Length: 261
Ligand code: NAD
Image 1 (spheres, rainbow, N blue to C red):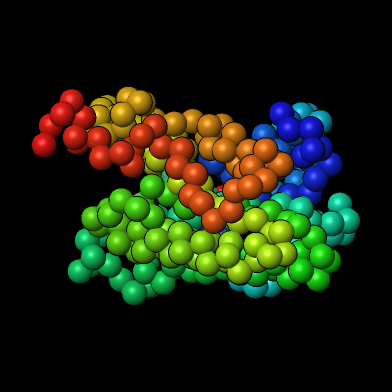
Image 2 (tube, rainbow, N blue to C red; image 1 turned 90 degrees about the vertical axis):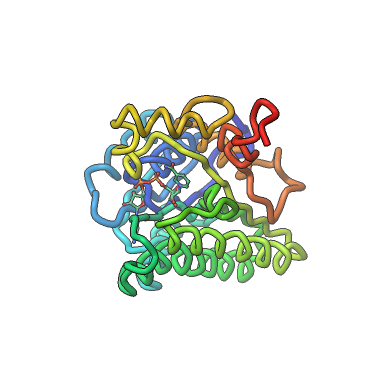
């Protein structure tokens, strides 16, 4: 737990399930005030709100599509109206689907880029506007992926979106460092969430996946939430523009394990 996070105000996008819910719950344990965003799963967001309140924080859920400026403005307005300020903005919402690239429709390409990359831009812009106008040393955390670094055949749009998040994060970090605003990404490996539940339900796929992870197991959402809490805290005060990989070693070229190659 990080004492300085108590009463801080955070927006978490895509908070109705998976990693977003885990971050919201962890922020609740830190006794923070949290705006939990959902797109369609109101019930999931309400559960996250309840968990935050039970843990000692305060929370409110808000519907918004992160790819719309109007939706993002609603999230910021809710934070200001309910909690009076904004300290931390977490761009977590994301989506993926699988298609060979020659069959990938322009519609699928644009939707994934719009949520995973444009959504990060719009959220970051709203937070930066508030931080700069109010002379606030705010903190932004983007959910990237190991696929900002590892190519992923049949997920070209997803990999392109996360590669974009990487350089966007680095650029904004440099641009706003003089104002004391920090922005970092988290690069999860394979985490047990609804986004890839089908893979984990198939024993063969699960075993194959585990063989690509030096620590030998998939990660839990709370292990990503722990990285988010650290990046939000003052313990990471000298860290900006990085991707913190929390991936069980997936980015370490595991096919070379045991001296192969
Ligand atoms: P998930 O599918 O469980 O949750 C994604 C969340 O994003 C959901 O709450 C969903 O409603 C929300 N969302 C999607 N589109 C939205 C939109 N337009 N507006 C608002 N919310 C929207 O997935 P997850 O595994 O929890 O993923 C969270 C983030 O972590 C994503 O950015 C994902 O790319 C990234 N990630 C996940 C893994 C993993 O293994 N689970 C690995 C690497 C990166």
